[in-house]
Image (cartoon, rainbow, N blue to C red; front, side, top):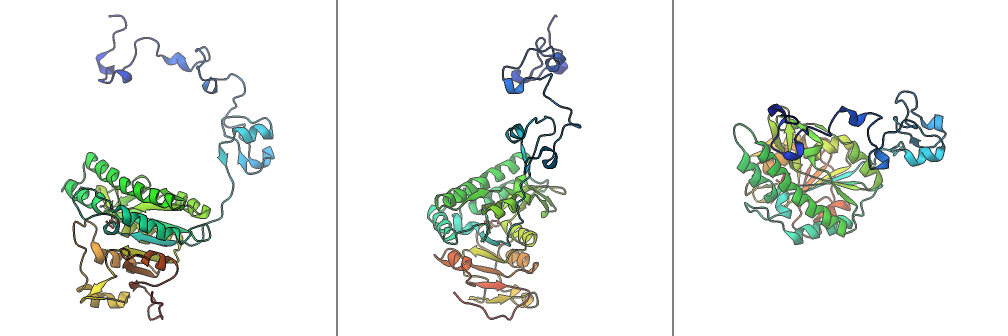
Length: 352
Ligand code: IPE
């Protein structure tokens, strides 16, 4: 029948069905009716060959801008107005401080996502007291708590996460991230979400690549990137859980962090009921059997996992209580709370 759609071209979504009339190759030709939006109309003049008309800063005499390769700029003003690529140089960021706040500080240990709004607000206010800026750059990473661990456990299976499981876990942790970012913004901290799911690839549940250029540019502008433990795509496993504890040393090494803080629900690494003041690679074995994991559902290794991650890098790190008011602000202002994890050791330390 005239106009009938061949069965192989039919879809169940009527919006996506091939139309028998009115859709054809000629829509892209010069003879097609002009597009109702003048900006999208094909021009027979004024559009230039991609190879011959790219103007550089030097050629156009316009500082800091290049014109898009597909379009010719005729005057410096036009070049300015039509440019979509700014080449302004931003210096590399100053070495940042990295702070991770555990999920147990920000959320209730329940099986459904339950935030602790007053704790989120207090942590945000303490971070605000540090006045993060381009000269005082800060990367904030938070855990997932009840917005991630129960969901990851629910979807864990020998075959890996299903797509719907991946999406449920990711969407859940982004809800907590939004609460944290909102609280920071309300405290006048220029904070922005950075979701590992969209910029990280893992191999066997270890970070293999992360797109860090946006983070560098944010730091250089004084923006606080706020990352979090997340599910990420994994070349070996399909998808895997990457804890904030793993992101901390990765970014610490990438950006040459000056110091690292882990705000947790306990006073530090506890062995035989007391806070261990310092752990170095050579003393780790002795305290290891006394270190206990965190309570509740923790799919990412608890306290032992944190210490292991921090021993792998050469940056002084502190594990301390972030449920006690003032401890985050104290750490950010240079105090040395809780347990220090260090490779160099035996240095005098300032107590809070
Ligand atoms: C866990 O991240 C991420 C998910 C389970 C999706 P973290 O390991 O950093 O979270 P907390 O601090 O233990 O809650």
